[in-house]
Length: 233
Image (cartoon, rainbow, N blue to C red):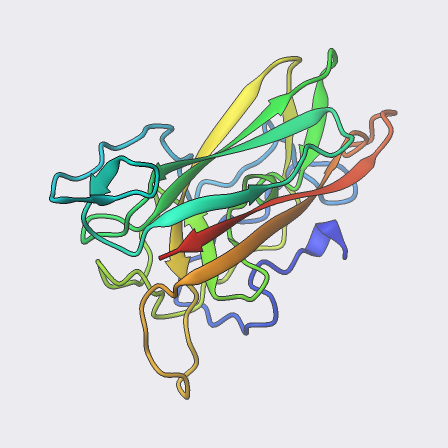
């Protein structure tokens, strides 16, 4: 699969409702890639790296002997890939496990440069699972600071989202970490499908990315895949 033209919503047709997740920057290398400093995209703000408190309510068994606030469905991690042989490492953390009227389920994705040299990583949105759907195209992660066409409490998108195909590059200093908050939505359904909210079951998310040699440097380019699985119930 070409990393420079990743299909974020699988085979689902993109029916734009006027929301574009970024725009192609004017800067970048001859191959159209843009770095953090070169990007001219002003369509969206960077997600605020904060964790909201879980809502109050009657507790339910969380499966570990503790309790969690009522609501649902709730997400749980059931599998996380080992780090691939590249100089960056991912981490995923659930920050809001239950869907309610205020917010959908939410996770934080963190990327860390584990090497002793500066490393380039791309594509800059995909590596944080922004606009990445699960392997069955039932769910999609979207930046937590955005506004999307979904009914509060249901969190099923009412329309598809158009995503630009630019290739963003980010640069990480040795030991540097960056995080993004992502909200989990149901993918918009076609007219002949029965309407529903967030589906339940087990879902697999994975992202293809590359490190090194992305903006004309002499570093060796490496391609990798990393992912995780979660359940909604």
